[in-house]
Length: 105
Image 1 (cartoon, rainbow, N blue to C red):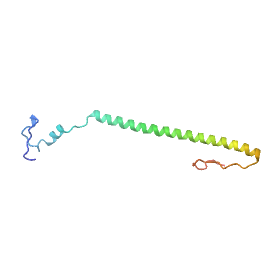
Image 2 (cartoon, one colour; image 1 turned 60 degrees about the vertical axis):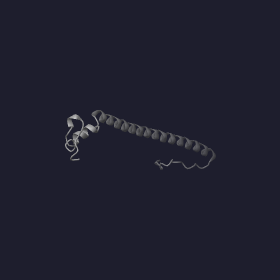
Image 3 (spheres, rainbow, N blue to C red; image 1 turned 45 degrees about the vertical axis):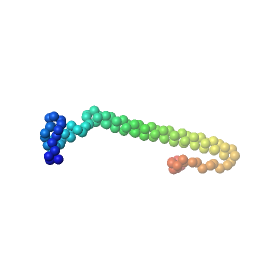
Image 4 (spheres, helix red, strand yellow; image 1 turned 90 degrees about the vertical axis):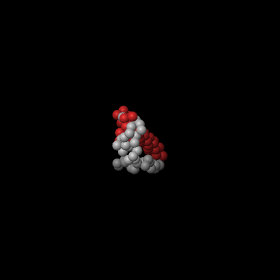
């Protein structure tokens, strides 16, 4: 490496490779420009925003689903109470759908 000299480009011809190492490296290796970094920032923000929005939408869907299940279960309980009041039977055990018993009695 110490005795190797450059043959091209013309402005570096005859100089030792050790002397022109960094300038030659910058000529040979492509670097990222400001538009490249801007692209990465925009893509990163888009990915972050998409993840945030999808998590929010899933949360809203889960809350609406839980409300629907609760309302449906309460309607079934009212119907069962009406039937049991007429026949004198016992009421069935209410399902909590894996969320624990949240009803305060």
